[in-house]
Amino acid sequence: MRLYHRPGSRSTRVLWTLEEIGAPYELTIISREEKASDEHARRHPLRRVPVLGLDDGTNVFESAAICLFLGDLFPESGVVPPPATTARALTYQWTVFAMAELEPAVYDWRRARRAEQDETPHAERFAPIGDAFRERLADRDWLLGDTFTVADVLCSSILETALRRELVHDTGTLRSYVDRAQARPANVRAEAIRE
Ligand SMILES: N[C@@H](CCC(=O)N[C@@H](CS)C(=O)NCC(=O)O)C(=O)O
Image (tube, rainbow, N blue to C red; front, side, top):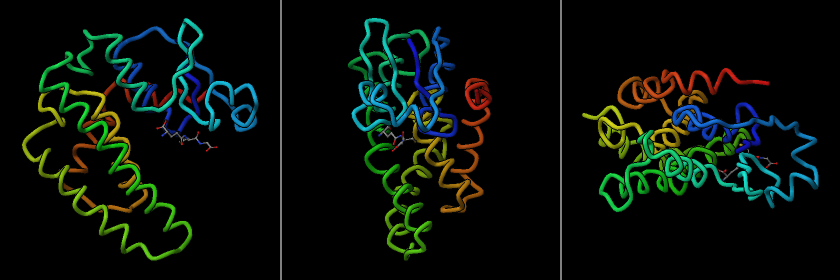
């Protein structure tokens, strides 16, 4: 397997997952120019990262899809619970919630701030999403309880962006969840890979 990666981008989620599961992998850090190339367009129709190149020559894109696939590839890692269990259903739920609700709210907010537009609608959109995490994590370390899953990779990564960019101020549940996730050795290793 080969991950096409740019440090500091969404592909770090996949790198973190690869480190969590202990998979052997190769890494290509692609430059902006390489990302814009026709060669990369054959890997990803929108010329984005992450892309995971499989050994059979298939290229898979979309960070959440790749993370879920990696969990299936290494079931003993536990980052994706067994199929057809309640834990698997909740892993899908929070993973899709990350991509369909949390990420658009946070990234649209970030874009509005950069463009110096009114942030109020974005703050209002985020509020119930933040509350959903506060409620879920009030008495749990991870979204599924004691078990860390790829849903935590995705949700904590996006919440980290929201906190770091000061879109959200939280010194309680969200902050400690993000800190706990960021401190995982697999994430520390993934963040350290810069070239
Ligand atoms: N939904 C995609 C989004 C991928 C994405 O937007 N990647 C960004 C980096 S964070 C990218 O490659 N952008 C390059 C560009 O748009 O030119 C995923 O989660 O994998």
